[in-house]
Amino acid sequence: MSKSPNPARAGRAPYKIRVPGSLKASVSELVTACGGGIVAGEALSISQSQVHRYTDPAEPDSHMPVNRVMTLQRMAGRAPVTEFMAAEMGGVVLWLPRAAPDDVGRDVAEIGATASKLFSDYGEAMGSPESPGRVDAGEAARMVAAADRVLAAIAHLRGDLMSIIEKEKSDG
Image (cartoon, rainbow, N blue to C red):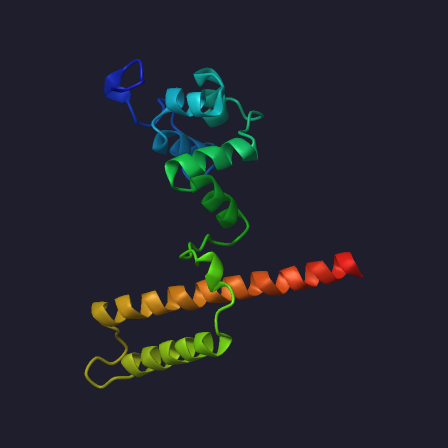
């Protein structure tokens, strides 16, 4: 059963128009993804009115704290506020598959071979006489899976290397 006082509005966006591409709009999107202001307020142990202030353009100095954003993004399974902030800085959020904890010590040569094959296959497909400059959907799906594995491995490799640097700084 809906927790919204007006079941017809359950899960819908707040009444006020938010400027698309604004922080308030991304927070509003997040609140809506969680089921609305009442549900979000309950999850954060704050009032629906406070949740509304976080999304209201008429309240320019009221912003949702990061810890609350993180709580709602985990709840929603989406990260519209993080994506907005990355875009504001000229970046993007790249979602990577999670590696198993025991997979961090993977074979770097295997990662290199997978990346090399991916680049080779892509170049070959783009230059193929049968479909010049085009990768078909089946090839693309296989390549995306390989690219995700390579990106995840590189992200974990970078994390491992940064840990080594930080450990040496703290020991040194």
